[in-house]
Amino acid sequence: MSVPRLSILASVYQGLAYLPAYLDELQAQTLFAQCEVIFVCNAPSAEELEIVRSSQQAWPAQVQILEVPRETLSASWNRAWQLARAPLLAIWNIDDRRTPDSLQRQVEAMERAPWALCYGDYLAVAQYGDEAGVMRHTPTYSAAHFARAFAQGGAFWVLRRAVAEQIGYFDEQFRIAPDMEYSLRIAVNRLPMGRVDGVLGYFTAAGLGLSTRAGELPALERTAVQLRYGVFDKVQAESRSAAASFRLDHVQSFGQWQPLAALWPQQYAYLRRRQPLWLLGRLRFALRRLLARLGLLEWLHARLHKEL
Image 1 (spheres, helix red, strand yellow):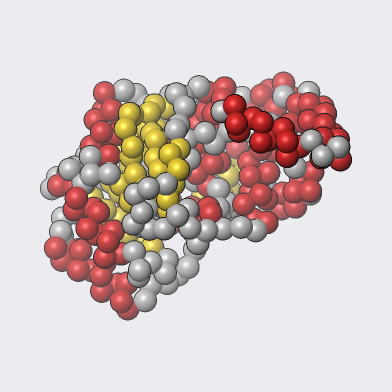
Image 2: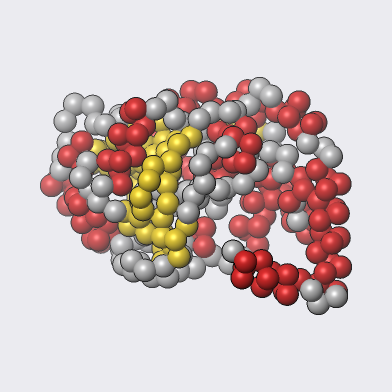
């Protein structure tokens, strides 16, 4: 293979249970012959290395392997991004499954349109291997909406490699939400995104993966992203002080710090315009507390879900 059409970025950490099936999933992709796969193996076991190396023996022109000490997911994605040879990149975690033509549909759409990122609908399933679950319908792209919400999820992205030249790489400060942060960075820079029709895959929401685990870290990182991009009305007061541990005005990639303003020239003017959202947020949370005190919050949620 000369230059592949697509580079697949796969971070591996304690992935022995998924790797054999992941290799089968790769081969099942209709675009597989035109792809390369970059495995970043975090503190791998001997068994994991044996499986990954077997794929390199089977497809020597298509597989790159990088062994690293344990690091953040964003750091592994950045390493793979730098090694990628294709003009397009797919983020594909080993505990998620794709429909066989999903990569082909996304790549063909990206080759027709100047999108920075392509996404689509997917199913959230309780266990790996399930094909029945909750359908996540993703909305048509709107820069204003996507600058405030992680509306498309991060499991089934295809990115344009060259976008890093304009807005940088993933921020390695984020362990759980680097894709959320990057999605909002694309949107505030008014870069185009697009969606393709049809189900792209099955996102394993078993509560064992980074983004699905309960705890304080997901809320903390979500708050840091909201503070960085002026989504002030959604900021939870209890997470705000802890989010101060992030350098919100700098992005960290490959151990280097870069001013966010260099990647988002409108940063300061944009945030100034959004200062009134602090008041809206205080009013929203005050209303929620009042409804909860009156015992109406659960009733209102149930009523809204019934109407939807």
